[in-house]
Image (cartoon, rainbow, N blue to C red; front, side, top):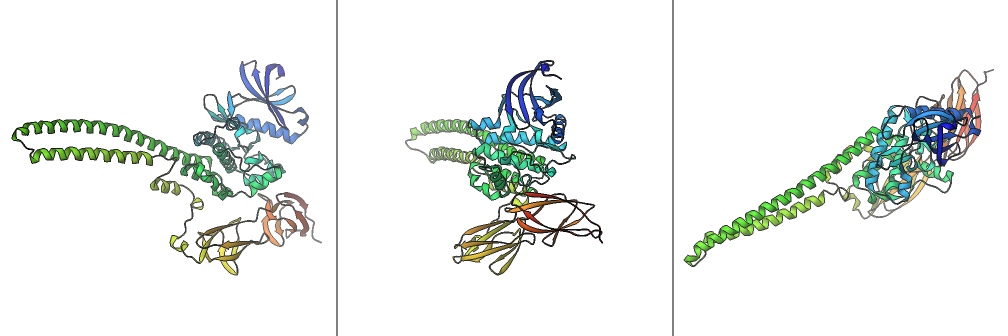
Length: 522
């Protein structure tokens, strides 16, 4: 297809690999987006293959919340993808104009999760969920665009070829480490996007690409606690389900996340219906009470008039007055109770204990809050230490062995200075100092992966991989091996061949990819 088939209307964007145009497709008389690969990249066969795979992956996605791919063609001898044009704005543009709210966050979350659920079920991972790839049409429909960095799950991984795919400020930790990713990486990116939708902050953005990757890899769920006041309690629990640094701690799928979110929405709608019913019911009761009061008042007056000829009020007339007074008091009490019910139904301020329990039970145990014994906390000569570690460690406090992480609850220790030592045989030990104050909880977090590097070894036919004489894995490797940065001793062993032994230098955050050939034994 030639360029004459399209009338270019305007340039939308340009990247290092493509240019995107708004265009008119003459033969079908419709407005489309054209995503054209730069011609000078045609000699890069891998990139050309990725571009073609992108079109094929997107073409199978027919969902109202996904921008549709119409065709793969050529424009001026360069490959081009013809896509649906959405009249509206990107979420990025909406947020730049100050459109921050939890209501918008919920709409975005529902729409994106529907899109991801549909795509993941067909083996397509987006890998670059961010505000710029979420479109809000003029009709209010929200669509996910640019599955250009997606990968069909049964295709060879480009990440394994050494390239990081995705926008740094929204990457998942495993994506930033260059590991093989699954659908849960999209859930993490969505969580980061949703926080920005409410608070307007890119929480993982750094001043450089390297700093950004470092922030992602050192991200821990506790770091978002500072935003808890910006969200209703159920929605904050939902965010935590998306944003666990370990993907095994996240929702297991977009479907699970969507079901959890729908349960929150359902509770909100149910309470709104209750509120409406209570308000209407209150009006009916007040009308009826007013009518009864008038009727009783008329009867009392009549009764008084009849008995006035006797010159005094009888006990019966006094009883009628008391009844009238009691009825008025009851109406006021009922109105007060109704107001209390309406105030309690505001989910944006609080949730009832039963709702809180219900939501808590839907979350994995690893995401439930840890509570300490309040009577123990009252001790004036002790404090508490809460310990977390990634990936795991044996923990000693001073000379006392505490146990292996994850540890349940917090640990009571005398006030004063203590040294917490984390040991994992695959990494250099970490020692942290903590000053405990009376009746306070101190949190200690150790991250062996913060300054770690990664190695990925290829050798045929297979080999056991040892780092510093500790066996770590067997080839073919499913993912890079994390190791402490610095000079490490690498040994690859296969009983049919001579051992391969080499000292290697591993840099923090880098993945060192090594290929070896065994030599026959003498």
